[in-house]
Image (cartoon, rainbow, N blue to C red; front, side, top):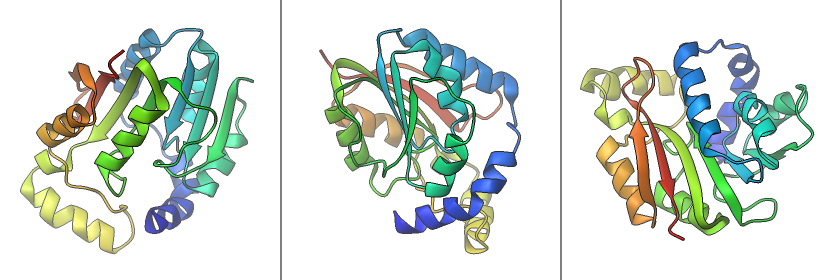
Length: 205
């Protein structure tokens, strides 16, 4: 993940300053996620970025550990006002941190960026308690218009504006989650972006 780390370190300040494109869709996702978490839950978030989602959701649980592979992202996140039960940690998405098992793992906009989605999903399953939840949102680039997928995105990657992205299709994403041993409980999109798939899955009890 070295190339990913370098990209996000370079982009951290710009990423932090970027406004949310669809506020209503983001708020709807937060509400759904919050409704699935309990005040006694211990939560691990991978790919937390500059911490905005963690800061919003952490007050509703007992403990929230937010991780990102980019030290610059974590530096920015750690400088923000945050609830006392929230901690930010530099860690790769595939490496355990804190003290598993967790009641829930959040993976928002990260599974399309990892080196091997099956390895990451296997790690997430191992971190979860029996009956624990995976809350995820993933860009399925493979379902996009071919002109974007094979034309625009590679150009943006070459000039350093877009990180390496896996060309996942939504069916591949669902299959990978199921093959990792999860039971999918909900799947939807929020707002107008039909390629950002929000999936809630549970590790069998």
